[in-house]
Each structure stands twice: as structure tokens, then as C-alpha cells.
Image (cartoon, rainbow, N blue to C red; front, side):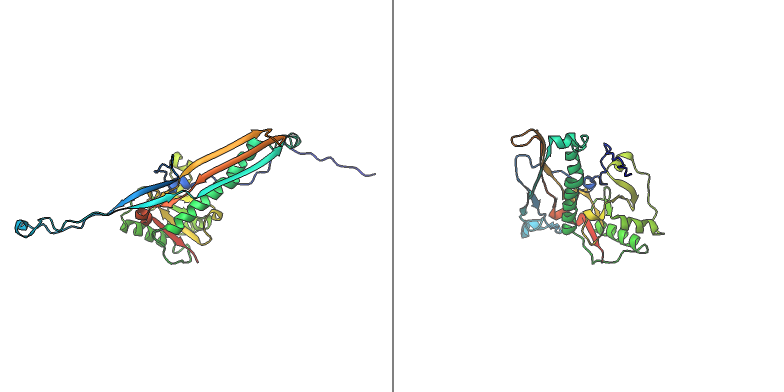
Length: 276
């Protein structure tokens, strides 16, 4: 005699693991795009120093030759205007024990699709526009500390502000750091910084760890000061329509307008080390 065993569906969704965005630690939102699609900022030159001429009354200006200052501009035009849409039938919501529901589906879309896309784009721009891009190398537990302090020294020579620097690493690079006998990382991090993704401090820099799938394939590590990169999100518009024309259920629409820009005079505040 055959017995048909029962199948039971639980009101539970097996969600995909996702990582919160950490780009706020590496970037800033100093510029305002309200009412505009493009922002321009000035770059002003300076004058050279001269030897003061105490007898200048007879030979010309005592202060040297008068120089004109240059005022050029950088243009930042938003290029990423992205969107998504999906619908959920009213019966599908009812017959999946409300697990297929518009609000939860929207949150899932943001968590699993939108945030990773924005992060990937911002990190790619920073790596591409970095002012310091040494030759790709193979990172090991023996050389990782040397390469990090070398990177910090490059920022020192560029006179980048020492406080606020961030080391961005992949899980693989972080493992090398943990294995390096020369590295002792400070793990006493304030709760406010832990909430932003900071896991430790090394050589005066906050350390954050990001999954490699949000970074370029040849990514080793990056040291950056947030002053270098402006990462605006001008528009985030997410709407759920109940029973719109032609649909019995919910229609979800979303739009996000964002971008990332590295300032010309601040590019030296980013050091990107690629790996072979």
C-alpha cells in the first residue's frame, strides 16, 4: 500500500547573505547636486616664491614679477541613472503565506541588487582614478605589512591628512594581514565605527573588509582618505503601487541616480595596489 507523505511549507524565506555598504567610510558627500545635473568646482593656482629685493625701488617690484593666477574648473556630471520594476500578483502573496510580499521584496531588491551595484561602481572609480598605482605584485604574509607602510608613506609624501585614512582589503588580503608576524592590529574600535564596517586599526588607518565580488578582479588593497572621492546619491525613489491599471496586486518601481568622482587635486589621497 502506497503512502503519500505530507509536504509542509513554512512561512520562512531562505535569504541570500549580503554585506552592508561601507562606502561611506571611504567617500564624502560634500557637494550638492540639488537642482542641477552637473556641478563644477574651481582649481586655483598659486604664485611662486621670490627673494625679496630691498633695492627694488630702482629695479622694479621688490616682491618679484607679478604673476597671474589660473582658475580652471572640474566638471562632475551624474551618469548613473538606474531603475528596476517588478510585480507581485495578489494571489501569489496570499498563496505563499505572504512571503512573496511587496515591502519585503523591495527591501530584498535594495539589499541584494542596488547596494552591491553602487558599491562596485564607486570602488571601481576609486581604483581607476587613484593617484598612486604601483606595479601589480603578489601579496604574501611576508610582504603585506611592507606594502601597506609603503603605501602610507606615499600618502605622507603627498601631504595627505594623516587622520581619517582607510585601508580597504578583501577577505583574502585580511587573512594575509592576520598571518603576518609583523602586524599587530588595534581592535579596540568604537561602536560608531564598527557600525560603519571598521574592524581594526593599522598604522593609523581604519581597516575595512569588503567581499571581492564588489572589487576589481586584480584588487589587492587600497588606502584612501575620504576627502578624495565624492559619491553623491542625488535621487532614491522607490514606490509600491497597489492594484495599478492592468495588475491585480502590487507594482514596485525603483530609481536611483548616483555617481562617484575623484577630485584631480585629491587623487594623491588614493593608493591602489593591484595583484598579479
